[in-house]
Image (cartoon, rainbow, N blue to C red; front, side):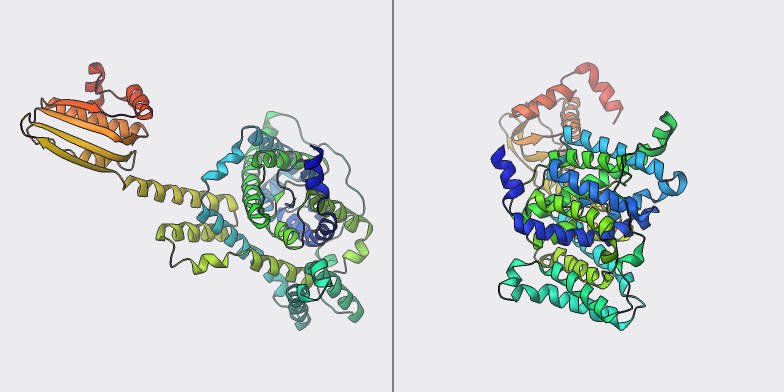
Length: 496
């Protein structure tokens, strides 16, 4: 236990401190922007980001991953805030946390294994596009100084790592932010800064209980929003965990992460913050800056609140161009450029799933809908492909007028029609043997198809023998089949 704690917290102290500082600086404008999207005061997003980052550092299942207020969650809050106000949003945030903790205990994090690689790639590419698109308002109808600062920021980010000694010891995004802020202040440039986005809070958050009636009507108001927030939050968090797993070549505890996200959101709601989840962009900034342990996430949250409350005069001077450069770096690093190159060699179905996921996420700005569409398409393509692998051959014993049909492959809802069509019901026979040694029956559709075949042959006076069922198939056939239950046969055929 102590060894694990030491590994997760103190095995990478210097890099975690530096990366956490970079993340804290990048979190400020995003938290403010997401608050504006949700229709609440900037301090709601800032308090949420502080609380969620600190809590998830202790309770999360993925060291080094950054969680805070996010745009995906903010989009789901707009209507609730507009129609019912901030207090109902805080109540919905608490309920969101409860749902996520339940998801952790129900081990719903394990469901991520059903999300295919093509869906994850589409999700990542869509998020990279959304991150880039979110920077465009800062680059439209602005003076040339902004473009020059952004270009200089990108140059620092990509070239500073090549500087001897310092380049390997200091994260380039931090140098970018500090350097451009100094340049902007010294030269007195008239460009947009963090302070222009909204007023920073001047006090620490305090504990408060949402001022809403504790009755069924309140529950009915917040329930649909809380469910949506819980699902989107967990999806984005699980996807982000997968990406950080790959970047760091380590594994995460998804179910612990579900519980951690829930605890963090309950904490945020009790401190006047809105619901949040893991952030792919900030997590990549953290990893690229050298952050690996829980300390980096903790520092990001603590340093964030210190900056906005005690150093607000300095933080408000950070030019948005510097942060735009950092986020453009994130979008470039997030996008899977290999997926474009691999379009030619990957199967068409894989490409369709990836592109559909990207298109839906970008069009709706809703990660949950995009992932759902991707998983649905991937499942349909998989079911269709597996259904094609079933083959049925037959041979006739002329001496006994017996035909043996040998079934090989998977029999389920997509292959049922092919299964039935393989039998010749017009052939005059005394006996039919259906050999299922190399077949597997998966669902009620497969059992129903077997019933149809057996009953049709028997109605024509043909003796039918079913052999070779494996144990799993026999279990489902014995439970659901009716061809050996005379009282059920007429009822079955009447329904077909």
